[in-house]
Length: 160
Image (cartoon, rainbow, N blue to C red; front, side):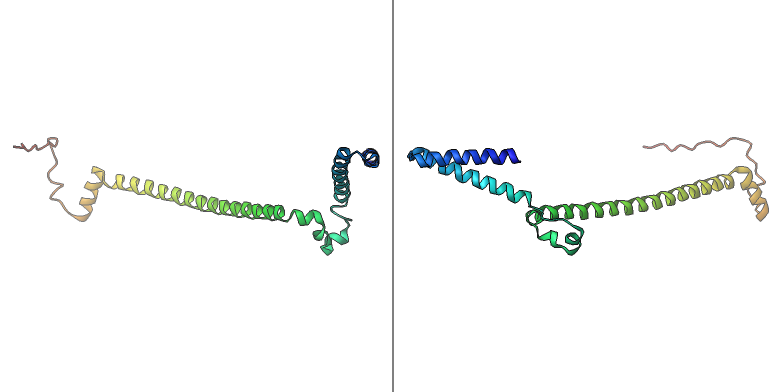
């Protein structure tokens, strides 16, 4: 930083000499350049002390929020906070969806087991031997006396 200040000071001295010599074109160019260098030099000094003195007391007390750096970055800080809120809300919603999906999957699995059990019970109850046994238990002998000697056949209706 010290070398840059010396260079700027030397440039200012050269411009002052051009102004002293009275050359109008050089004088106007030198004034414009001098103003630009002074503004640039002043900006550098302000940038160095942009955040100010940082200590625990300034952070806890909130004085750091009044520094020029933070005042210029308010919109960016607000944007980052909004993004954090959106991210947190999205993550929470995703976790809730995962919980619902897990509970629905367990319910689906229980239903599948239930359907499989009911299907198996129905198969057992509709077997010919089980039907005959059941008919004997209730005393209905009308179907039991006639054992089929011939296999069943299909009745076809002719369509006209």
